[in-house]
Length: 262
Image (cartoon, rainbow, N blue to C red; front, side, top):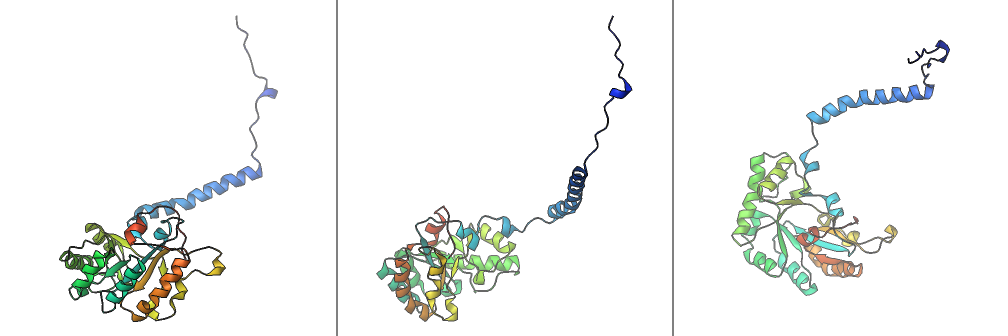
């Protein structure tokens, strides 16, 4: 017969008393959960903008995450073709450099031979809209038309652009959707020469105070500024001395690895 075991009152387990520090931590956790519930609900109802989610938008930050330590430099020129584009092409040819031109659709039919030469010499062509208007907050149908009309003008010359650069770098979700519908990627820049201010372009060169050898990135210029064309030979020489390896936009984008902004 098994003996009956009776717990003596003096041996019964006593309830654990939580320390003030434990109680404080528990209160903090409960408060945090209480505060986070509205935030989670808000995010569920209002997700992040497509521009922040869409990996096909190559803004300055995205471009800074590409490239390699070989100091890749992509020279890009907006707003052409124009009267000074041929002179710019002569410089690139003489220097053995290929660049990328984001052209305005309404100007394409004015300079067909320039564009044919541009492509024949290994340069790349991108889309800079038809009328050079700010796309942000424009009607989606208008944005699509601006991009598609430029593609149509280029298609007559056998050119199919891969990249769209919205004028002034301004775009919204409708721009992203329009580019995606045309199988294009939005591509901005990481080094702005601000040559439209007609100032000394040495500002795009590396500064000793950075403590970093060389310069790299996607450079923004405009091929319809005579001052830019005149300054380009010396600028290319100095960038070469700084260690630049010149590539087109596609070559730059297709190269993976860390890249620091200038």
